[in-house]
Amino acid sequence: MPPARRNMLAKILLSAASLLLAHLQHFLLALMQFIPGFKNYLPSPPKEQTLCHRPRGLQCISPLVQSVEETPEPIPAKIKGHIPKWINGNLLRNGPGKFEFGNDKFNHWFDGMALLHQFQLTHGTVTYRSRFLQSSSYLANSQHNRIVASEFGTLAMPDPCKSIFGRFLSRFEPPQPSDNASVNYVLYKGDYYVSNENIFMHKVDPETLETKEKVDWSKFIAVNGATAHPHYESDGTTYNMGNSYGKHGSSYNIIRVPPQGSSPGDTLEGAQVLCSIPPRDRAKPSYYHSFGMTENYIIFIEQPLRLNLLKIITSKLCGKAIFDGINWEPQHNTYFHVVNKHTGEALPGQWCSKPFVTFHQINAFEERGCVVLDLCCQDDGTSLALYTLQNLRRSGEGLDQVYAAIPRAFPRRFVLPLDVDSDTPVGKNLNPLPHSLARAVKEADGKVWCTHENLHPEGFEKVGGLEFPQINYSHYNGRRYRYFYGCGFGHLVGDSLIKVDVETKDFKVS
Image (cartoon, rainbow, N blue to C red; front, side, top):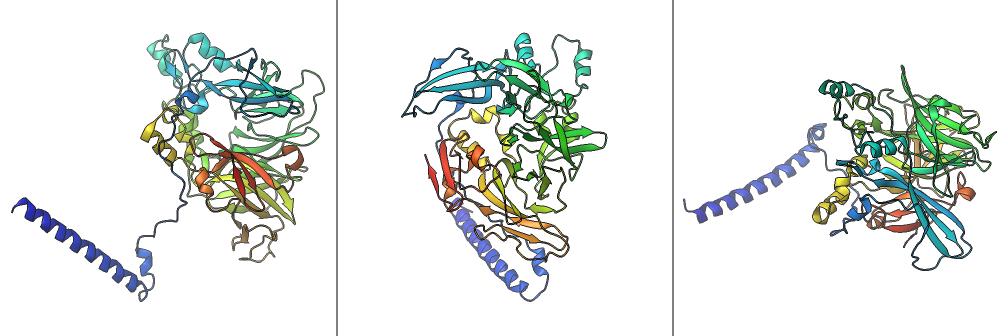
């Protein structure tokens, strides 16, 4: 048969097959009306998806994720625009600044060695300085000119100077926590520390950025680390959360640190565990990065982004990094735990929602017997694995593809009614707040199913979502508020500043 004839026949057969499938689909849909249960055997329709803005031709940001030299002596900064002369003080920041030692290179953005930054504002001028945190990890890596301390996304290789047998045996050593505190500055008893999320912090001098003292949480209370986002009372009392791991599995712990040290060398003396919460699965506790606090309560979000403890403990033996043991399990819901921060008592209610992930809470407050909790939420928990240095250093179409794959975070409000008991009606919306569209409905099993309210209008997707929220903390944390600020993510890193009005849902981008 001639090629032209074959092509024509193929087109005719393809058109006939498409027409047949269309008629078959129509027939099956009609059949559903007459045969009960028949629809259960048909494929489910596609789930509704949030359309996110997907820009093309993103600017390469590789220069932002390269190693830099520290600048220990202040240098003048270039200023665009005008800084009011009444703003005086130090803006402190922390983050990764060195991504290789010798021929060894880190894999993940979070692995880079902590570089402390200071922007000193004085009468309209700004000076800048930076220093590398003198952590044990940094000093050991520098001394050996290779990576000897494993980090979140990088497994340190055995010492090449050891014998083959010695290198083999080193695989069986349990992974040691790094003290590379590259996440945030925190304040305890008036002293400044830099922290990540494990057992170690470092006290630092906020004026010179010198590393002063390494502090081990486990020397004071029975925890294996704490978050880098504590909450503060006006008197200086600090609340935080940290996990503990023992023979009976893991626990989530709420920590309270008193406001002032009794002596100049005092660190975490007087810290106590207020409450321990058992995970829904003790072998696979939830990963969490922050928590909420109101005037009377701590709110912990147990999300289905889980730490597989067996995978993490055996990661070195299997040649895997720690982050390979963090798994997104969307078959499980997200749960909210509410604890009285004065008594340490966990409230008996069970509040849950569809699976989501949150890294940063915006604010929380109490109103009319409810806790109102505002969070930046992602519907997919796979973003941590995507922030590798290889991805961040891409350009062109490759960079666009990475950006399109990363889940976006959006500001949402949940309302948790606290007074729920056996007499509370089932199936009724228990949210009494006229200004909130969030829903909280008690189900037959006693759980309260919470549906969020968006704190943004239609079209907000065009800014790429929002993260790293900030409020006027000293005036409004734990209280009803109106405005918050955050970074818009039209790129893999924040590329705009957004102000959101939580009452009108209006926002401004700059």
